[in-house]
Image (cartoon, rainbow, N blue to C red; front, side, top):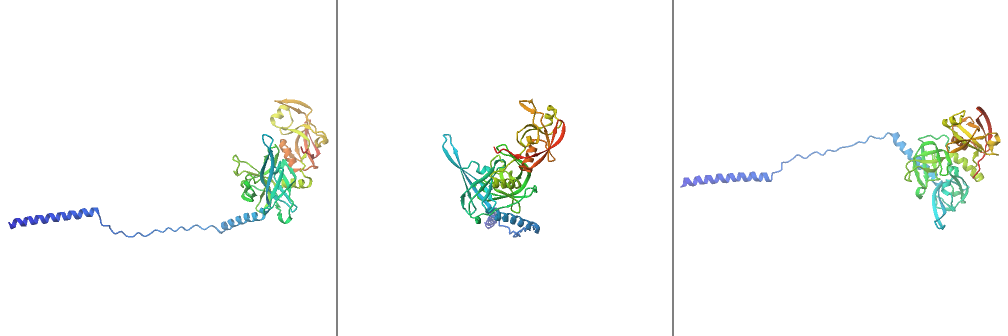
Amino acid sequence: MNHSRSKVSIIVFALVTLFALLGCSFLTQVKPNPTPQPTPTPIVIIVTPTPLPPGAIEGKDIEEQIVTSVYARVSPAVVHITSHIIVRDFFWGAIPEEGTGSGFVIDKQGHIVTNNHVIAGAEKIVVTLPDETSVEAEVVGTDSANDLAVLKIDVSPDKLHPVEWGSSANLRVGQRAIAIGNPFGLDRTLTTGVISSLGRPLQERGGTTIYDVIQTDAAINPGNSGGPLLDSEGKVIGVNTAIYSPSGGSVGLGFAIPVDTVRRVVASIIEKGYYPHPWLGIKGLSITPELAKRLDLPVERGVLVVEVVQGQPAAQAGIRGGSRKVRLGNYVVPVGGDILTAIDGNKIGEMEDLVKYLETKTVVGQTVNLTIMRNGKEQNIEVKLGERPRD
């Protein structure tokens, strides 16, 4: 009996011990004791920037100083121009409209330069100065061929801060260009860029061409027209006049009338009320190799004089126009006249060369030397330039 109890006790003890071990194993799997982990050492990355060369920092400061200095000195000369125009609706009713643009003061007498298209057709023109003084302006004169106009306002001279003229004769592509104007009516806005090209011809809506125009990537938008384009010294090098833009906003193709043209035209407008354009008094046809072959001409380039205006410089000097007519396609052209090949020693390849030379290198009353071909022989004739009819 006791022996049996001992066996049972041993068996029970063994089972209890087994369950105890299994229970411990189960708990260990469900809730493992976390194994202590060593605390990671934080990684600190220190970036040491490469210092800029002193020259680069100084250059940046100089760049900012140049631009801010130019703005501080020249922006008081830039004015806001508002043109009041009366248009007619379908029933011929009068509808007032306003246009805005820019201009700049050129002297203490109150003369202001702007674009002709800014004030064209205006019934009333109001100029607003930087101190918010608004005054009605009178038109001294205009020159639509160069898209320039001169206004005059009557204010105290101490309110006027004239610009300083520069020169466009020695400009270089890559030079700094600074524009100040009123784009979209936002007064005296400054934009910067460079001169991106020189010597561009700019054809106006009326068909005339402005020569030697400055191209810039300084942002120019509607409202900038008539404002100054400046160099890094704050001198005027051009008058902002047009942009090329499919969208109507700036795409980095702005154009300015060169200041040498501006000064020549403006001085005449102030003196005479208009700018007299020199002319020879001829109608000409540009010669091409194909035309030369068809008409059996002695040269492949030049200008064939088809007509001279009686009483005008070319006729007075003995230049001859066409003496007979031939048909060229749908046109009848007078031929047999003189052929112009050079002016003052400068070759003439086409009519555009002649017109450009007269517009940019001569004035009314000046005598020029024309090289011509007549009856297959070259000769030179001096012509005193007259004034192109203003109409």
